[in-house]
Image (cartoon, rainbow over all chains, first blue to last red; front, side):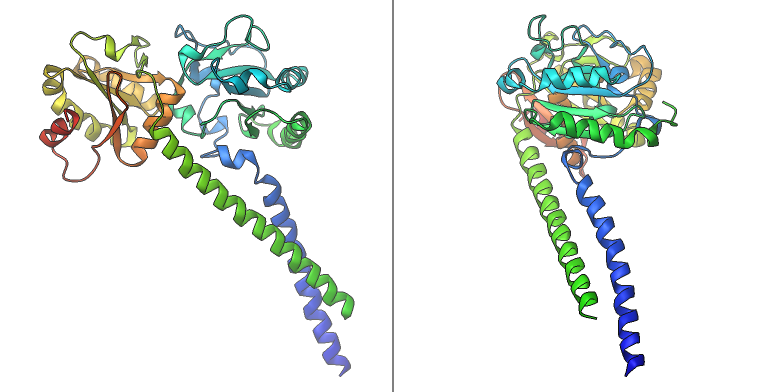
Amino acid sequence: MTMLRWLVAGVLGCVIVVDSVLTLRLWRVAMGHDAVARIVVTRQPNDAGVPDLLRSGLTVDGAPLPSDGPPGPLVVRYAAKGCPYSHSDEVWTSFAEEMRSRGAKVAVLLSAAKQAFDGETLVPSGIPQAAFVSLEWMSRFRLSSTPTVLLFDAGGALVWAEEGTLRSDSIERAVRALERTAPETGSKDR
Amino acid sequence: MRRQLATELVLIAVLGYYGWTIHGANVRSEESQQARIAANQSFEVGKYTGFDTAGRRVFPFDQPGVDRVVTFLLRQRSLDNDLGIWLSIAPGARRRGVQLVGLCDGLACGSAVRARGAAIEFPVLLHSEVTSLQALLNADALGQGVVKVADRPEVAVDWRSPGQTPELLLARLLQ
């Protein structure tokens, strides 16, 4: 009888260990199943050969976007001048400032060339606006509503995204996502 | 023993919860993707302007005599076949006021098209607007190109389906 009890206890112990591992794995998957999963078609960091938006996009005039400077994170805001939500997003300004303070570049991806922001409505002022983009870059994402914010780490991988106007905790979540991937991508070549 | 059973029950409950959450998210993701594709079918996608493989600006509707523009995706892995289909109808299309516009799926395709130079009788874009690209991606996923007639809504046309002939394709473009 005692032996049977030990046997049952042993089996239960093993099941608990296996389930704990499964629970941990599921928890990690569930944590990652956020807006990024809804937007990404294929997870291709830049080292897979697809250049980032600054190297894949063109301005309204067809000029290349400024892509000089040290490698770092990149924030892409898919937006349009004619979209009221792109204008009324109260968190966006703080979000962009926070990301810039962390060494990120910020750029706008326009839904169409005629949707380019002018001097006063472009926030932060002076950031590059991509009006034309290669299909190679575009086919990695599903962009169907403005505004949508995409955050890429220094290795070019999409680490965080949010469709619609940003929420009050968006900055915190984006920073957390960026910090989580920083050690992994720090050694990657761009 | 009771403690172990209780632990196991809690773990099963947690697994069930996360499993259900992920399943729900997958379903929602699939549903929203279908909704987006449906919505994109009626996108006002502009006029398929962009920059070709040589970096020249392309305004398809600004060509004299053009009243409809047909845009299609050129895939690098089937480039010869894709180009063959459209080059075979290019002269007939041009005579009937149809402007063909190809769109490369990447830099490799762009280089291959550039190397062929004047042999390709229609513009091939390497860069275009997001809404145009998204609509074309959605159409191509179904083996279709997009036909835009002046200010009318866009329509899709099958061109990758087996059994397609240049004559049939041209006839469909003109419908």
